[in-house]
Amino acid sequence: MTLTVTTRPAAGRVAPVGRRRRDRSARVLGYSVPASLVLLAMALYPMVVLFRMSVSDVGPTNIIGHWNFVGLANFAAAVGDPATWAAALRTLALSAVLLVSNLVLGFLAGAVLSEPGRLTNLVLGIMVFVWALPPLVSGSVWKFVLNDNGAVNAVLGVIGIPAVPWLSSPTAALWTVSAVTAWASLPFSTLILRGGMLAINRDVVEAAAIDGAGYWRTQVAIVLPLLRPTLWILAILTVIYSFKSFDFFYVLTQGGPGTATNTLPVLSYYAAFNQFEMSSGATVAVLSMVVVAVFAVPYVRSINREDQE
Amino acid sequence: MTTARIRALFTVVKVLLGLLFLLPLVWIVLTSFKSEIQVLQAPNSVIFTPTLSTYREVIGSSLGAILTSVQIAVFVTAAVVLLAVPASFAISRRLSAGVTRYISVFLAVLLVLQMIPQPMTVIPLYSVLASWHILGSLGGLILADITLLLPFAIMLLRPFAMAIPPALYEAAQIDGANRWRSFRSITVPMMSNGIFTVISVIFISSWGEFVYAINFLPQGTVLPVSGLLASQNTTYAANWNSLMALAVLTSLPLLIVFIVSQKRLVNGLSLGAVK
Image 1 (cartoon, one colour):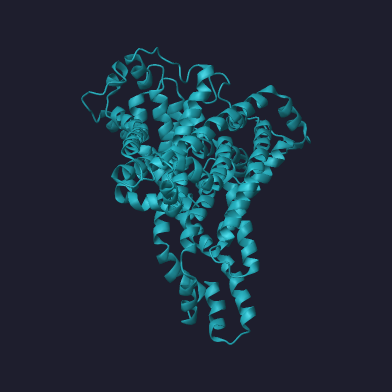
Image 2 (cartoon, chains in turn purple, red):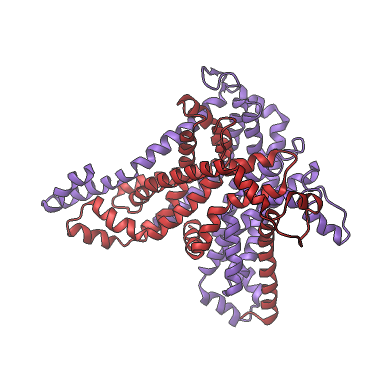
């Protein structure tokens, strides 16, 4: 309300135009102050705390209290621990599955769903519904159907294939959870790529058709190159997502069997909240955030550039 | 342009794609209408006598959880909207070079915040909330949820705020309206579609959030529905029928929003997401 009182006279008074504009334009940012304060206190400050944890010794006994500074000892321990590297490798495996699914399947689904029609709207509606569904819910149903005597194995049994221990075997579990994660993120990549395809100038596509290029030829030679920037952004987001992905792991396997599905976020979460080794959890978190940051820089740049155009 | 063969192929792919996403949903609903005995005897049967016994049982025992969820979702949604609408207004217009610079930094921070994995923010927040003595209280959880969803809400609202023609603001200014007045009578009404989308999405997300809920609420308190579903999931002997009924309860807000206004939500989400 104070804004009301201070700005009102300015409208009627004859003030130097340049100055008035600057005053006003800076004041509009006041509307972002409450949100900024919340984010500073609850999002940015905790990141500082996370970093402090990674260079201190914080265990179950001193979460509140004095933290001893230990320098880079936690990082040395994390880098020396084969479990960290195994988790990093599993995160990469998840990235690979998600990249193939989001880019290749997403492209195909986006192309198919670019064709307008009632069926398209229906399928898109279902996919957006699943995308908006809490991962906890979709994870729960997959846990049920991929259970050793669940629906998937029952269907396989009907066509004579022996039951697969989707979630209970250490070799299969990582691929199974990755596949479920890929299923859940396919609607997003489909929407993004479909948006890109719909934005392509129809004339270009029609010109290719007149020149005798068939459907597939047009897709590969015209649409694919035009979508390259979108595909790049999607690829970056996908890699970042694989460092974020946690909900499906929590619901489906909790990192098990054994440590078979411990990716970096899973590893750091359970270190912090099962063993209350806050420092080692925080250290893995900082390490994986460095990787995320490397991928985030080109993404943030391109969004900002796009925005200013 | 496309030949008949390709068109037929497209239809097949669309149907398969639809089934891939529809069947799991059907399975949740089917199972939630089975009794415990039915699930134990034939977990994969498609033909059975539906019963409401599971819902009666689950809703009866989780009334407190539903109440907790409602409280959390209402408070979080209200706070996020109150914070995000003015913020998106503030960063929607590049009025001067200084403002533009500020907006770029603000946007970059929002993007980066969205990239930070939640299992990693939960670690420092645990100690931050503890040192502020709000760990183990609903207030602390609500504050954490607000922060988690705020960057997304601002990013989602921004295209809507930017779509408002600057000429409207200029006209209002000439008519003597101050900034608060034009925010109230131009920005808010013109962003109503965006605000609707954000209310839906934030309500759905805070209703389904569980990582903060299971860690920031004290042991033995009434968890929200999502927390209940999460903790039931981690026990070994799962009652699939009640688990699926809980899953339906957890997706209830989404179901309602979809029934009320599917088109508005799909459009709003694509506008914010495809950015």
